[in-house]
Image (tube, rainbow, N blue to C red; front, side, top):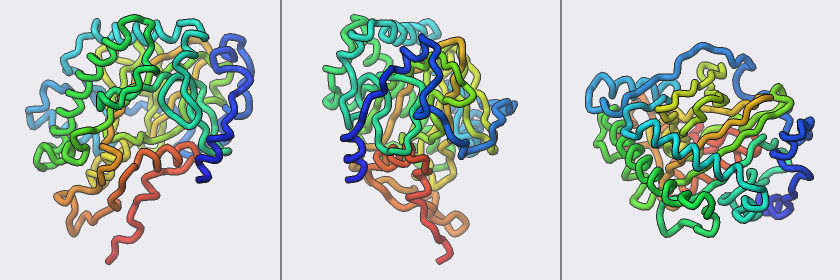
Length: 352
């Protein structure tokens, strides 16, 4: 109830992030990160992000690399996925074409108050919310009947065609990775997919991060873990900005034009009973170059109850999380309030 009340009072900022960036304005206080709650301020840690060749996951050695990456950093760079660099560049290009359209054209697809789909900034769910220095286009792609085509851009003219084709390919890769993750833990390969259900959600988010005059005070995206089961990110080919928290240090994720960044979300940490990690991550800003990315989020059907798989619970590793439904809503509220969503579903005492 309180959440809905806050959202209903949502107000727009006097100037958009795009206008403030173009004019070189000092960011308003609503964008300033007051304190760093997660990790040290040192973002120069030289901890390599693992690279996994998806085409080799039938081998035990690559499968072990996958298990190791997901149980430590919770993310990796995926190569060997079957999508060429030229194909990925076409997806990046269609995103850039949309973002360079006139403001009045993009406003046709603007996000409505209290909704997450469409063009614009995050919805406001808390008075304490620090705003992200970014704007984005968020669209649900699967299930097909859940698409809100009125929010899908008609310009570029091939936007919808390219998004559906890209989403189909990425979803196929995600399903293969989920089967491989199960095999890496000696589970039946459909174990995780069964919890996702036959109508799992796939959402695309086109992110745009313009230059910011105060990168020391403002973030493109504040520290958070994803609500999803698995997230696949197509990065900018040149401009870095994504950082992952590893061993309490912020680690830069380098740009590799032919690679996807794959990270797990909270729901996979729950399903794996804490063996696999949902990494905290953020996006930093810079003063000179705009950065874009395309993120694909896959999560279980909201009404599906998810929880730790029975095969991963034993005397030495008791159940860490309770079963939950609609975890996405829990995560989003906690994210905007600066709380850690996983802590709210954790079983506090395993001594019995």
